[in-house]
Amino acid sequence: MMRVVRLLALPVALVLAWWAVSGSSFYLPGPGLVGQAFAETWFSERVVEDVLPSMGRLLAGYALAGLLGVGLGVPIGLSPRLRATLEPVLEFFRAVPPPVLVPLIMLLAGIDTPMKVLVIVSGCLWPILLNTVEGVRALDEVLADTCRMYGVRGTSRLRRFVLPGAGPQIMTGLRQALSIGIILMVISEMFASSSGLGFTILVFQRQFQIAEMWSGILLLGLIGLTLSVLFRRVERRVLAWYYGSGAARA
Image (cartoon, rainbow, N blue to C red):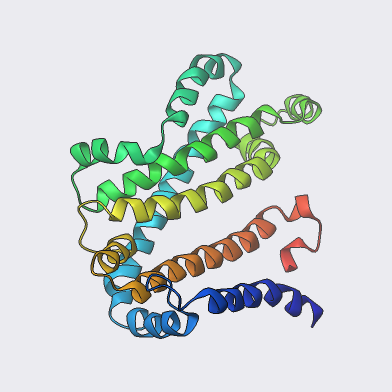
């Protein structure tokens, strides 16, 4: 019971503060108006027209970034020579803000779904890649020597030693990339788009449908929270050995 109270205390306090300061401005409607707009807007065909396409792009870009990040990060982390060669280039591209790449990606990939997926990949890739590299670099030398002595090589070494050992760092990169992916999903849909959450929220803003605009922002927050909770449960199962025997049941 106390756990539920602790979880709900801050959200309830924020809603009460929102209710207290709302009403003084047209641009800050109260929780009641936003809740009504939320029900009318998102419990409708917009779920199919806007929410599902956005989630599809997000998951596609996130999955592709995960495959590329881990697939490239493992060999780079295992090879000091390759790492020394590529590290300046990786740091350069990591420092480029993904939103500034949107016009370039639009020129190369057009304005349809591939562009939006590539924008998400361009931002999600780097935390996964760099965390994978650091996780592989930090592998226990004693365990590495043990694998070498017992002839554990190839895919068996990768599956039993490299990936589990770097797992905590890889999951950290995946967790960071998830929030970046949501941001880039919205940004990509604000450019030359005709559907998606980012497009719809921008339309509401331009048409001065303020309550509907806030309902879209609220929906994005709920999506982020849901994905975070789901990711945490997956992480606990994948890294049950790291968090303890009860982690998989948590």
